Amino acid sequence: MATSDTHRAIDAVWRIESAKIIASLTRMVGEVGLAEDLAQDALVIALERWPESGIPNNPGAWLMATAKHRAVDQLRRRTTLERKHEQLGRELEIQQAVSEADFDTALDDDIGDDLLRLIFTACHPLLSTEARVALTLRLIGGLTTWEIARAFLVTEATIAQRIVRAKRTLAEAHVPFENPSESVRAARLSSVLEVIYLIFNEGYSTTAGDDWVRPALCEDALRLGRILAELVPHEPEVHGLVALMEIQASRIRARVGPSGEPILLLDQNRLRWDQLLIRRGLVALERAEKLGAALGPYALQAAIAACHARARIPAETDWARIAALYDALAQLMPSPVVELNRAVALSMAYGPAAGLEIVDLLTSEPSLEDYHLLPSVRGDLLARLGRFDEARAEFERAATLTCNTRERELLFERARTAELSAADAGR
Amino acid sequence: MRVIVLIKADQDSEAGVMPSEQLLTEMGQYNEELVKAGVMLAGEGLHPSSKGKRVRFSGGKKNVIDGPFTETKELIAGFWLWQVRSMDEAVEWVKRMPYPVNSPETEIEIRPVFEMDDFGSEFTPELREQEARLRAQVEGSAKRS
Image: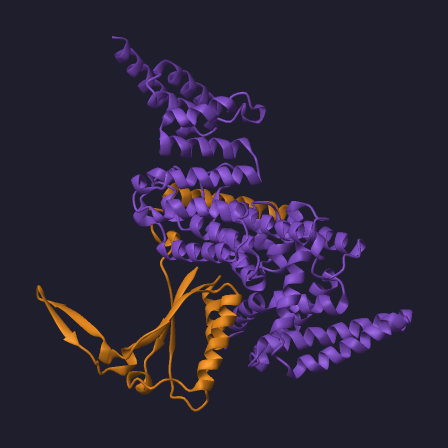
């Protein structure tokens, strides 16, 4: 095998194994930064040796054992310097762990547990959101700093620095490598879910404002979600998030037009929706529902997405159910945007007047003052009620608020149509 | 990216001989590992070709041919659909598939599935150019810093 082939194979092995190795090492050495360094050492040794010796039969176990030996060396060196009893004790423990690890490859449950701890650590609330995202992609997703930088359109140095700082923060705060206690578990889990969904959305819609999907990030987020769902199968919200991501990802091919323009859900060619992802999403949603608890925000959003996914044509959409789901969502996380969505669903299910009632209440909402979708939705409802003059004014207002050129054109066109209809009605 | 992993038929699979209990257990563990890694999207095993049919299109005619089909090496006994980051990763996963030493020689075929990127007209020139530009920006700024 040529050296470059071996290097690519090592790269692939690393992607598959690194999270598990780092997780195991962190449990041993108590610090995620050191653990990653040790794992990297093992990788370097593999890069030196494997091109000549060939790739071992069980490359993951080889990397793990090598990294653990490095850990023992490292701790021994430290211990000779410091001679701390505590560390001597730890060294013994580790030596035992190493000798077990050498021939015991069936540590799967433990590894799962370590991996979960690593995820909780990477998404620790001490860290900034940006740092959590970078650390999660790096430690769990196995992405290189360069890949993360490219995905987020920042420099490699920025990401590298972000990761170094995050590891330092964790070390200085002596964050223990453990699963969060019952009292904070829900909050810590929701921090993990937030990070994963953020990665997904970064791929799905772009923060830079260009109409461009970066599917690789969506795939990374989906993979993280699927991994997490197997680690904590009894958490309904994890399945809820996976369901939401699977169903949203099923529309990636349909949501951008030939010249890069975004296509709204109801205008999408549903034949282009990915049925495999829809099916997986519906199964994940079912898993969330079967766990019995009331649906959380992710599962509710997934259930809404599922209503659209089940409808072969827009006219088959179960808007009454969507309105009810938005109602439930509004109870859990009250937000004017959720209310606006509920208003749209109500108008689709029960007619424009039902929606307008809520939308009128939202016009005094300060957080929606510059939100172009509010006048856009209000204009639509008014037009459907035959109040064309008011509709025209709303479409014009919406057009001046949106930053998207195509959308602005569309809204001005709707304003003109409303104006013509008003003239017709006046005649 | 998605890949489809094709498992070729052999004499046993064509004869409808079920794999040994040990192999089934190992296969189960392997599948579980794929699920835990978020790699597995779908996968199925297929009945022998004796239960299959072919429809031959030839000279404007359609003929239905009943199985079994003889050229065993060309036949498929099962497939997986995986989500991986690269062909290299797919190869690495395939290498981990249980394969008892006494089993007959076989080949597992890995084929990438068409993605959005592969559709020329959909992924427009503007979008491609935009991506190239962004890539250049990122690389340029990375080099500077």
